[in-house]
Image 1 (cartoon, rainbow, N blue to C red):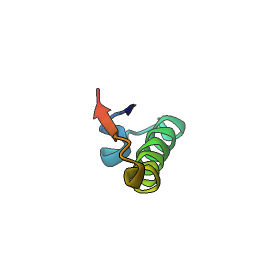
Image 2 (cartoon, one colour):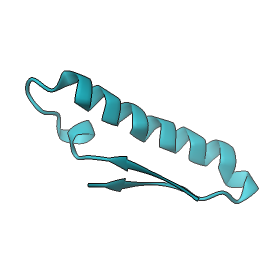
Image 3 (cartoon, rainbow, N blue to C red):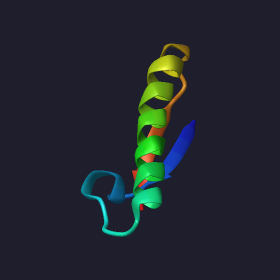
Image 4 (cartoon, rainbow, N blue to C red):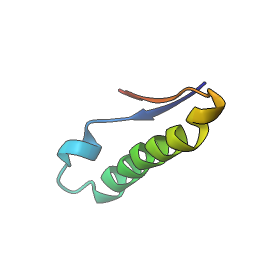
Length: 50
């Protein structure tokens, strides 16, 4: 099981916080891709917004 932490920043965006928003968006995309790649091996990949 892999759980990645994300925030609403990747969806809503925040002024003057571009690097943070980009990083959180990348984690979301990475988690979705990893879930597709490892799902067939019955590995659970998910995100949790904090």
